[in-house]
Amino acid sequence: MGEEATSQAKHVAIIMDGNGRWASAKGLPRAIGHQRGVEAVRKLVRDVGQMGIECLTLYAFSSENWKRPEEEVDDLMNLMRKFIKSDLPEFIANDVRLKIIGDWQGLAPDIVTMLEDALERTAGGKYILAVALNYGSQQEIAAAAARAAAAGEVTADTIAAHLYTADLPPLDLLVRTSGEVRLSNFLLWQSAYAEMVFVDTLWPDFTPDHLQQALDDFAQRERRYGGR
Ligand code: IPE
Ligand code: IPE
Ligand code: MG
Image (spheres, rainbow, N blue to C red):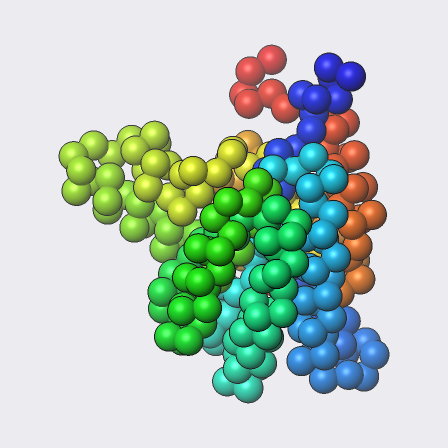
């Protein structure tokens, strides 16, 4: 029992990748892949409390994703609007506290307003769902270092204290779907000693069982943090 408790991942982050390839493989438009991706998120959020996870961080839109065709960016933003509207009551019912990381104030004003409302209405939740929107890790670190410098002292601790994730538990496990083995500017600082799991499953096919497998894998890892 005791051993299980120490190897439980508290903070899990996921790079949700492969929506486009999922759709292409089925001859469907990419937008359908993104829709199905939202359904995968929905199922996961329902189960996260039962998995012993305190914080789930999801990479939803990177600061580099603006490079995509305007139509795809619009589809993604519209999906976000729909998702917040439809799923906010369920977040509240599932004791989920929403957190947004990234430069989300730079999104469309109506989305910013919706997010502010969602943050306020989920503030009492127990399980943190941190969604990375317009997020770029290099930009996050640069801004944190600038703020640390302005406050007078630049150290690893003062930088960490200014990251978006300062109030979250340390990152235990990072999962990426779709077979890509890279971080794509996600949680670079926070991943210093995170365990990583890369799976071939495309995001729309990713289920709570897949996450449980990653957690089981994590439980077998020996974390040494440079010691021995
Ligand atoms: C992930 O799926 C969703 C976002 C990046 C918003 P992709 O759209 O990157 O899907 P692939 O990688 O092209 O298959
Ligand atoms: C990372 O996936 C961003 C999100 C999952 C939101 P990308 O599909 O944008 O990453 P690259 O371009 O393949 O590195
Ligand atoms: Mg991708």
